[in-house]
Amino acid sequence: MAIENIRGFKLKDHNFTEKQKKFIEDLIYRYNNKTAGSKKYVSTYRYSLCDWINSLGFKISLKEMIYPIISHESYGAYFSDIDGNRYIDIAMGYGVCFHGHKPKFVYDAVKERLERGFELGPQTIEAGESVMLISQLTGVDRVTFCGTGSEAVMFALRIARGYTKKDKIVIFANSFHGTFDGVLGRNLNGKTDPISIGTTEGMVSDIYVLEYGKDESLEFIKKHADELAAVMAEPVQTRNPSLQPVTFLKEIRKISNEKDFLLIFDETVTGFRVHSGGIQKLFNINADIVIYGKALGGGLPISAVCGREEIMKIVDGGYYRFGDDSHPDQDVIFFAGTYYKHPLSIVATLASLKEIKRHENRLQEYTNKLTEQLALDLNNLFIKQNAPIKVHQFSSFFRFMTFGDYPFASDPIELEIFFFLMMLKGVYTWERRICYLSTAHNMEDVKNITKIAEESLNEMREGGVEFKIS
Image (cartoon, rainbow, N blue to C red):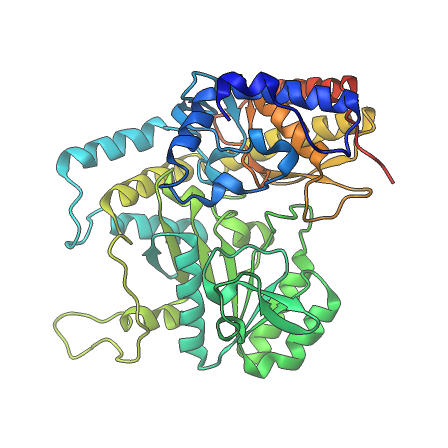
């Protein structure tokens, strides 16, 4: 449908009252006109550009607004789209942009490296200093780089299986470990099944999917410990930030020490964001293997698998010296990736780590307190407005969740309308609604986000669109 004709669009969903239809039709018109360039861009390239984000969260009633916003430029806590609209960004690159968009220290480091070139093949000189900083901040012995969090998960599991000579892995429901087929499983009536077509049963046959933080999961782990290569946890799940089972994780650590399997922390999100030393330092729990990503790269793509020397030597054969008869072990896993130490990503990582070390833990303390205040203000607003929404928050990430009649995993249409109104008024969230603040956000942003949330709820109520509470 052409943008210029959208004023004549009529909802065909009979579940809406006439007042609601008129409100939603008007919202569609306003949203389409404000973001006309984004809609035109998506329409132009949808056939050629096969992009899963185009149809994420699709609802037929809101079809004319379901398209990604196309950005043009960004700085700090804000970005502008191709129509010139400016947004407070609370998606922040899915958590990547801990320092905000285009931080000067990262920009300067990448610019300088661009001038020198970004050759692949020879080793990148900045890699050594980067791994030393990771070790200093987190306490890990050795570090190997990957391109994405999904790849880091894949290699972490290969390392664990290679080291322990066992096959089974425990993961937890509602954790997100990327898109590697080997973790795309769910517990269906006591059996692990693929969560997606295209992933075979064989790819997930060696994983158990348990409930996170539950005593029965600990009992299962104890019972099956002899066959486990590792238990892998997203210590605080991005999809449920309010669940922070420290005692549960410490008990797994204790069992793993006794039963000879590895504990893997997937800190793709929490690493360097929640604390300069990550969850390990914050919770005082040392994992055998730790995965870092997102905030690690200062905005550029990179991840890392880290761990104890005796485990990590299965990647490269271990430490040896020149000038004597020492040599690497021959029993190593297959590990390779052309872009894993890309010079631009490495210098961005080094710049990000230097900034984190320079401020000790003050950056994390600042963003944590800012996010706590935003969650408090929004939750007070939702209580005042009698809206069945609650912000669940940990550190500097948070998620809008509903309750009452609404299921955990699916946003009701009322919440989707709420987010479209927020976007219309200048607050950007991505389609999964897992949100982040950065060091570039400030208290004025917190006040503006809360103000826009209130305006959006009021506008919904005036339009006859209200949440139903059971």
